[in-house]
Amino acid sequence: MTKTRSASHEEVNPRVNLLGLSADGLREFLASIDEKPFRAQQILQWVHQKGVIEFSEMSNISKVLRAKLADVAEIRPPEIASEHISSDGTRKWAVRVNGGALVETIYIPDGGRATLCVSSQVGCSLDCSFCATGKQGFQQDLTADEIIGQVWLACQAMGDFGEQGRRSVTNVVLMGMGEPLLNFKNVMQACSLMMDDFAYGISKRRVTLSTSGVVPAMKKMMGNTDVSLAISLHAPTDELRNTLVPINRKYNIAMLLDATAEYMASVPDVRRVVTIEYTLMQGINDSDEQADQLAELLRDTPCKINLIPFNPFDLSDYKRPSRNRIERFQRILARAGYIATVRTTRGDDIDAACGQ
Ligand code: SAH
Ligand code: SF4
Image (tube, rainbow, N blue to C red; front, top):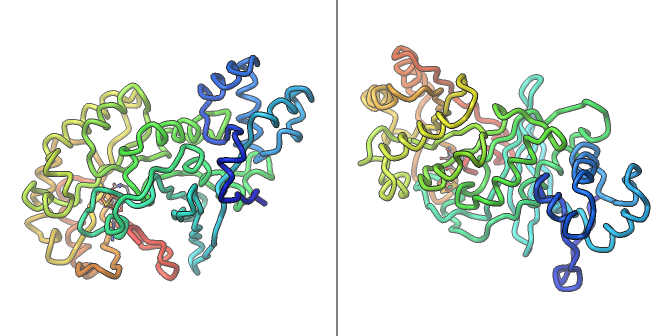
């Protein structure tokens, strides 16, 4: 299926991996080898729509150019180290990245749609108190080819490349391991491929970047991208958020909501709203009063609220609230006029739920 990579690959193989190059990046690469920029579209379609990674099979490209490309470049997806399939259809892949570390990619089918949850880093430096990834600390940024490679692998595994027009991966969320905005350039490049009509062509409304609130990077997004945005709020006050999401001590809730409003104003589609993620933890942030505070806090932020029941893991003492409590919290928000959904826990039997 995929080519295996030897540990010394990087030393012995100086060929450029084209998998993570966006249309602009490919055009630059082609110019650097004295080739016409319009080839970029052909290569994108072969790789990301047909799943073809051998230049020799790219039949609308001249034989001479195919040989030249094979000489200086390659298309090398990351490797799937393991696959688990849940009884509810959720799939979890452990994907091996450069240096041997593993990240997770989760495929979550839901009726006619399916969401792919993609990782952006190995570990995370932000150390949110309720997150398993945060407990690992930061190990490395994924390259653009490792990020888009997760989408490529999922499409290949689900048979999306075989049939014209078949699409099982309909949505992508950057909600796997890592803080996407701390790996800005590579994440932007991969998002651009997800939304490019010559690559995956997923609508901007269906590609969502989730951030815990790296405010300067949110400002940098403006003009750079128009992906959909989700912010990990988790608390209605700075006092509480400081303890759950430590980056709040640097960029507080007011700064975060300001940056959110600015970004949302910068995307052309006026109907799009930000998603507020709120992980519910028993006795921490799940009271009626906190629901009221949250409703008050978000009064000027057009949004939908996604309540995520806490997913327990070793090393954590937090508990998931009861179903009653969760529903009550949701009802208070609904009564205040919000669209508040509870994220159903999927893939529980294979540890594929958020934060696991
Ligand atoms: N770093 C980004 C994206 C990855 S986390 C961010 O923090 O937004 C995706 C979502 O899962 C975030 O909202 C995160 O707060 C939440 N999450 C992390 N650990 C969790 C857990 N144990 N249970 C429920 N949600 C969790
Ligand atoms: Fe990092 Fe997001 Fe986990 Fe916080 S919740 S530690 S930002 S991955």
